[in-house]
Length: 87
Ligand code: SF4
Image (cartoon, rainbow, N blue to C red; front, side, top):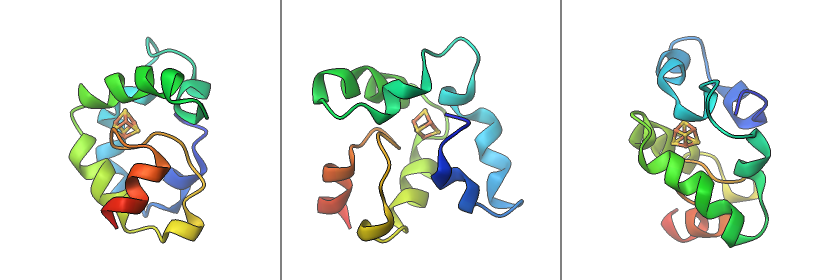
């Protein structure tokens, strides 16, 4: 998910965990998967997140973003709607 705008908010120090992100590995399917609006497609992205070594850090990070600024797709194995409930 190298083109995920939300990752661009990270400082250099915070970005260290991104090198382990499963969504940034070459073998991972298209980044569009993470921005799918239908749950049936988002499930594949969620499956990738569930096997991501930095899933917890990713979820912690995205939950700090106010909901009205969170316009992103699947992150930390959650959809935007799920994150709204977690905040
Ligand atoms: S948890 Fe998902 S969105 Fe977050 S870094 Fe890992 S694969 Fe990417």
